[in-house]
Length: 86
Image 1 (spheres, rainbow, N blue to C red):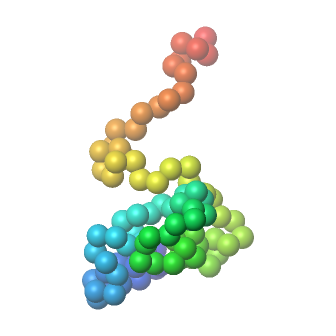
Image 2: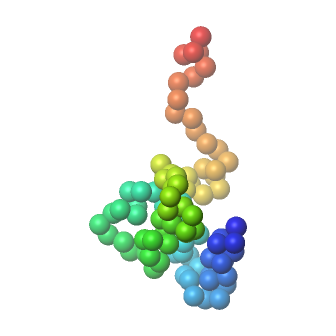
């Protein structure tokens, strides 16, 4: 939470772009961080490891944001229906 607060302060102080920043584009998948092209104004390291403790036990999300708020509130399960388990 402290790191997120520091990222918010960077935006408020004008040191980070309000539209293309570490918070807006999080979470960063392994594919995004390892891509050949990096067109973001922050470093790959800050995207991959926003907190030093993540270096040992990093969870890599499978996807980035899912359509912002709509996707967060209306998730679609792609697994088999309950009928398949009867």
